[in-house]
Amino acid sequence: MAITTILAGLDLSPSSDGALERAIALAEHHKAKLVIVHAQADDAPIAHVDNDMLQQLGEVTAAVRAEEARQLADRMAMVEARGVAADLVSRVGPPDEVLSAVATELAAELIVIGTHGHTGVSRFLLGSVASSTIRHAQCDVLIVRGAAKRALYEKPLVATDFSPASSKAIAHTVDVIVPNVPIDVVHAWQLPAGSWGATILGQARFPWSTVRDAVLTSVRAQSDKMVAEHPDTGHLLRVELVQGPPASVITHLAEQAGHDLIAIGAHGRRGVRRLLLGSVAESTARHSPCSVLVVHG
Image (cartoon, rainbow, N blue to C red; front, top):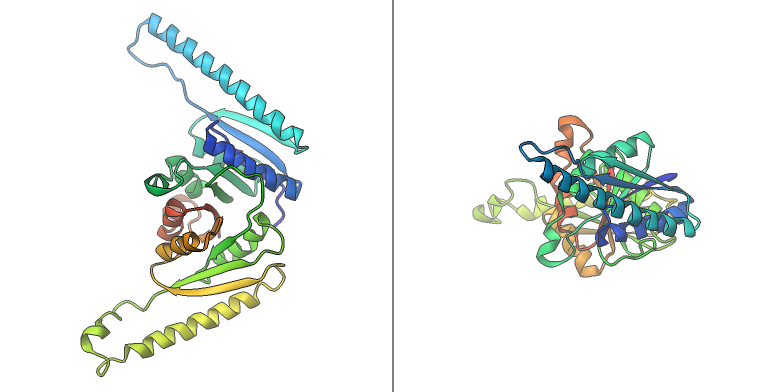
């Protein structure tokens, strides 16, 4: 995929600065325009307060706006010093809505945002902005976790269910990783619903191993077909088939093997269907130990 415009959501926090570093690296790599997007809080008048209170609130708002403008100017200067073409968009509104709207207007291919959850218990705090953005954006969303690093990703893991969205995730992973590094691909397979009953009935009455073998044969065939469909990525595809619930398998493998990126396709599109983003995609983004690229199918 040709990336020409990248949006970096910036709320002036350390996590969004980490996202900006990754966005700069990607913009340099693709020679793309980088658009820094900052969502301002809505400072609508508050009812039932006296004039003195309104004046004080106005002074605080003005001071905050001035400080935001100073910090945004500093970051723009830092980006431009790298020779990256950059614009700044600052609008009043909820961050996820502002990001999605600007991405649509500019036909951006990628939104890069940070999240305040990193490791341990705090990792589960994906944040309403990140969660809402992956639900509403029409383009890919890269959720950046970990220490700030101005570089492409080096050890990617792509989750696949052999759908078109998963195939697209493999193709788009190539755009954010170091050239020539292997791409690990994982498929979490499960026995058909009801297979648990085979244990109760016993092997003699219900040879459940036959069902397992049939499932694995089908999965391997789909895996071989998937690899054959991506002959020109410039990256070796290494496929692993693991039995278990998809989100748990994906995040456990990423943590165990030290991956710095998980890429996953999402099936939801717009309107009510956006609610069907998929528990796997959202749960993976929420519990991942590393950055996550959500690719919309």
